[in-house]
Image (cartoon, rainbow, N blue to C red; front, side):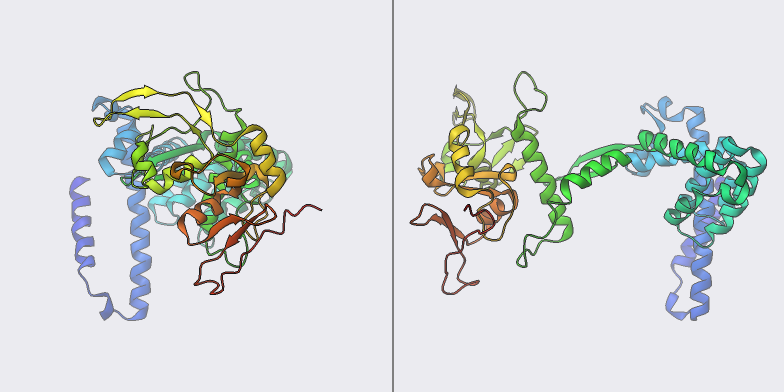
Length: 416
């Protein structure tokens, strides 16, 4: 097999060096179809090799904890991608051989094979091998017309075509099987990037997906005509708001005897001079601006550090704006005070108008409620906030937005 694959690799390399511009349009299309068939056939070979290696225990013999982990290192895959390959290889090996053959013949794609294998397995359980063979033929034919997502959706009623007498009962069983697969496949991966950011990947089961959408969809809507964030950025900020709310409730499990909290380390001098970056207890770095923003409405644990970074004195935790002071702030502002924002108080941070690190005091006259988005926006932009003569906050737009810089107010939370 190695010799044949080497020859195939050489042939493909020769194709890669061919000038595609010299081909006629019909030749380009034919070449694309052929490349796709070869890709699927190679996928069948790859899955067969993975299944054999998994069966022999090669991964553990070479020191890996699982075949998926071994594939990650060997083929530079993500763990979820490697796990899907191992699972599909097992299904194609132990399930209906017709699915494996359809993939080897180039009639179906890998993702289609996954959907077909799941469906054929369900049909065999519900209606027997004869109905499973019929289902395979129908699904392979559909695979020539539909992408994997639509194919899986259509396959939920495959028994209407191959075994209508048991279709209704099997549909319920298939739904249960899908729920079990969703439970099995659920995962969330947090990958730290080199610059300190975090990449989230994963698959949520149906219930959790519904919870997430219910939590972030209302917070993902544009905040007005001036909101220039992309949909992805709005969802990111909505997730941030949900996490802030969860931390603020004080109902998360304790960690090491302390309530769940964010711990940021920085130097006092650097903070007051707006120059010092900070570090989370996870090792990630924060800009000086981010440290100052977090300090607006956070539990501050003052620590005096020596020049070598050794702790010399550790103070007691204190919260800057909480209790009766925060309740008074909620009564005054009613929610995010930025003009045009309708976020309620529970989604808001208490922002010091004159920052506490610059000598600002902790008082109602020096505080304003801001949602997560507008809190970040105020720290990053040329907007300014102040209290007007009637004691309510007003925001002065930057000159490029309004040359006359007429102060603006939020009218969503006005109390009668």
